[in-house]
Length: 64
Image (cartoon, rainbow, N blue to C red):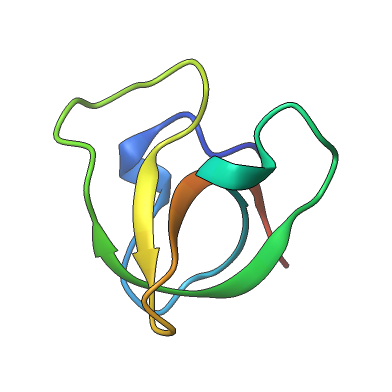
C-alpha cells in the first residue's frame, strides 16, 4: 500500500518515508507516525508525516 491517501495513515502506523534530503534517491527511512502534516485527503507524492523520531518526510510505503 502506498502513502498517497490520508485516510490510510494514522499515528502509530509503521511507515517508510523519503526525507527531503533524500528526494530523488531510493533511500527510505522507517519509523512510526507521530503527526500527519498534510491536510488534504490525497497527495500524489505521499502524505507528509512526522515520525516519533522527529524526522519529517513523505510516506512511500506503509509497512505491514
